[in-house]
Amino acid sequence: MDSPTKQIVVPLSLAALRRLDFDQSLSGDLETWTLSAEHYQHLWDSGLIQRLNKVLGCLIDDHEDASIQGVTALERVQTLLEQSALPADLKARLQQLTSLARRKATGLFFYF
Image (cartoon, rainbow, N blue to C red; front, side, top):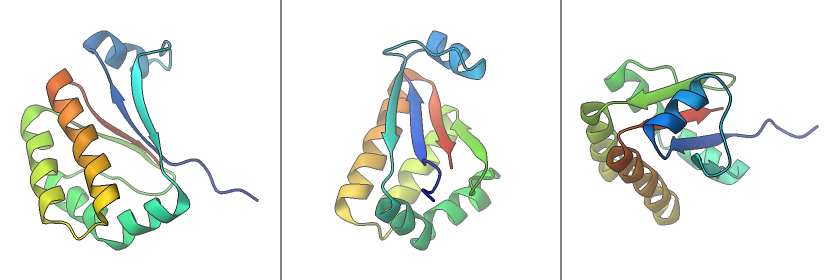
């Protein structure tokens, strides 16, 4: 049996963010990264998810949908990413998504 898809999504506008809330996203609304099993395992094993949950009070976990929104929260994500011991390619992609979320004033949405 295949494991469920694990994705990190960034809405590309405030309108896209509203549509995501209602599961009515249009083509071009979202930057979506589908994590490989290996990337997800590295992300989990690094402790970054647990630190995000603790520092930001969110609940990113298996079988949970969670988001990180707001300038301050996204800045904290960026700081925690810089301090993390993730493989370079994984860290770079997460930093790219976090920067995009900050520029678009939307957020990071975790579908695990």
